[in-house]
Amino acid sequence: MTDDTLRVERRIRARPGAVYSYLTDSVRWARWQGASAEIEAVPDGRFRMSMADGSTAEGRFVQLEPDRRIVFTWGWQGHPSVPPGSTTVEIELTPDGDGTLVRLVHRGLPPDARPIHRAGWDRYLPRLALAAEGGDPGPDGSPVVTE
Image 1: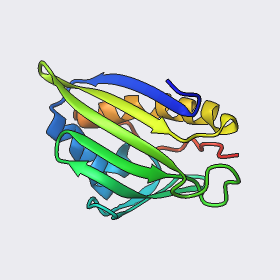
Image 2: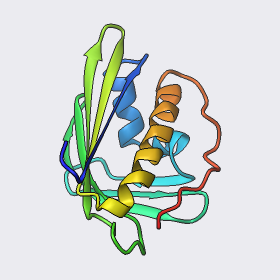
Image 3: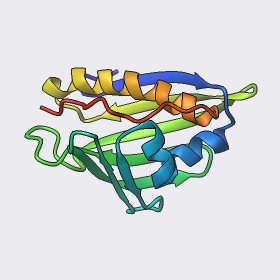
């Protein structure tokens, strides 16, 4: 792991196709992270996700391999060290029995932004798992501090 990289893994009791759908559909994304999302799941398509507190993450899709892998850029509007599109998130979906092993790698994070992004992904991957497994994670009312 390089200094600017976070790695998070989680097993989800759902097939890769189900997990992928929660990463490529605006309504489904907003079920597990944020208050709303705008997702254009095509190369160079827009990624935009707004939190309950009004903070907004933005980027572009770089690569999409259905049911296997997604790469997109990430950053926060108005953030001094992580502006929109300044970092890269790669999510790999590997079949694992009746479920999926999710490997998330977030690259390009400056030192001051790593702890909050680590806490964020540690919070949100379990919410993704619950949604993809057919549960209801409930509204995401917990704001993420972006500074």
